[in-house]
Image (cartoon, rainbow, N blue to C red; front, side, top):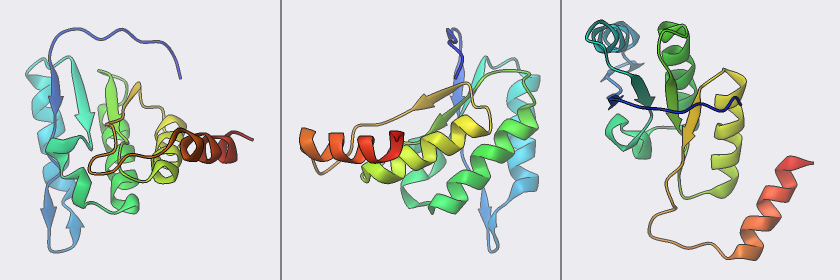
Length: 127
């Protein structure tokens, strides 16, 4: 991932849903509205984006769609945090593979992993 310095206004964008899952037509409208109104970055799958209630697949879809729609016009920051360290690592690697500009990783909430468990999980994924 490249080193990027952010400044200005970054919108923590919502993820619109309908009965079929993510409403990509509305999501595109929201993204384009932000760009047209000169926002400096978009944060996808942050806590404003319903990330705590989204499946891993939905998060991947939202992140990839946002990156593709933005098409390098402004930076995209992907929220990949959560309670499961392994899922955070997998989603972070996915986000990097679709070219997000940065990751937003929240400290796990309601539980605290031990340093040894964190190190074990991290080592498992960097081999």
